[in-house]
Amino acid sequence: MTEQKKRTKKPFDELTITDNYMFQTVMADPKYVRPLLEMVLEKKIRKIEVLTSEKTIETGYDSRGIRMDVYVEDDENTVYDVEMQASKRRFLGKRFRYYQGSIDVDIVNKGDDYGVLKDSFIIFITTYDPFGKSWYMYPFETICSWDSSIKMKDHAKRIILNTKGTKDKEGHEVSDEIKDMLSYMDGNAPESDYAKMLDNAVKKVKGNQERRNEYMNLNVFATDERVLGKYSKVVELIRDSNELVSDEILVKLLKITPEFLHCTREAIEKYPDWDDEDIADYVISETECD
Image 1 (cartoon, rainbow, N blue to C red):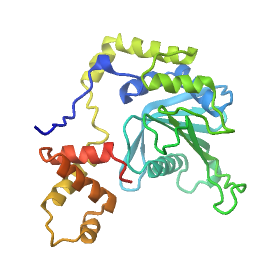
Image 2 (tube, helix red, strand yellow; image 1 turned 180 degrees about the vertical axis):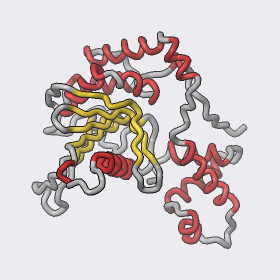
Image 3 (cartoon, rainbow, N blue to C red; image 1 turned 90 degrees about the horizontal axis):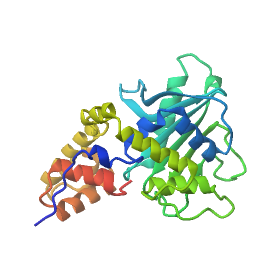
Image 4 (cartoon, one colour; image 1 turned 90 degrees about the vertical axis):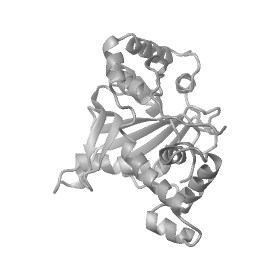
């Protein structure tokens, strides 16, 4: 019998810090997010304000907003966005780009000078290794392709923290606190003071009946439903396509990448009993068809 894939809400008592609801709830308190920022950025932050957890920014491009897990501002004109990426995501680099653009548009009002842009850090915590180097951390900034000593100085940095990390980049070691935090987020027992603090916060949320009721009434798939619906229709069209329609034409008509087309066909063949939504969910979340 072919395996069936069902999209179900995770039981409240099984939530961990890497589940979006739990991550947003815990990190809404500055006392939990501030130590994370300080250890990752290796600097002291005098004062921060969590503007809101799961902040929604309306970009104005096509009325499509973007929801951020934890959006923070300090007293030194710097903003921080911390995102939990608990499943493989397509176009990770483009996600960074879109988040950065959304933050900047939100800061700069029409007619303002670019100088009002704030220093920004976008941190993605991934529960998979997006680059296969097994590093605990992957930091990025804009540099010249011909000479890495020349930096753009756009005051925007992006960092990926990898819970599957097992080693440092030689010459760029991260602290034991970061390693233990990532180990805890990967499902292991907390060892450091900060990891234990996070674990206690998770237990406190689970013991809160109001939080339990809130979660039970929450549509945890709301963020991805529009994307899932769009790609479900694409899967249906791919199923119905015949050999008279070339891959080149399909890619152009459906506005997808050749990789997405290939992965969709593989999934349809591997799981013939899955419906279009399950195939779309699988291809988007569990493959690396960038």
